[in-house]
Length: 126
Image (cartoon, rainbow, N blue to C red):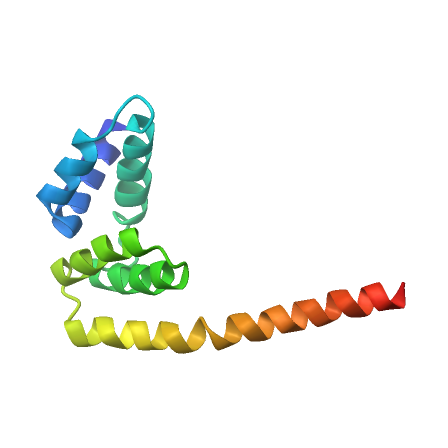
């Protein structure tokens, strides 16, 4: 583990999710989950969130959309709080969720039907 990247990630993680959330996650780490906490802090928060290509507000908006689409309620709750900390407004969060409702429902269904139809055609063709 690169200590400098870990420390950078820890600072960003704390700024986004809050000290209480991060302290609890780190305090609950045990022999089984310690490596997970180090990996998340170093690579997720240090390497990716620490890049200059996007600001934290934009990263938070992207995370809200992806985590919503993946139906990960625990992580979503943490990232809603983090989004607020990163300057995302309640109205912006609402708009992200409305967008997710439209684009993660119907397109997923359409793609599933498209793929299903192709597979069934292949099976019927023998």
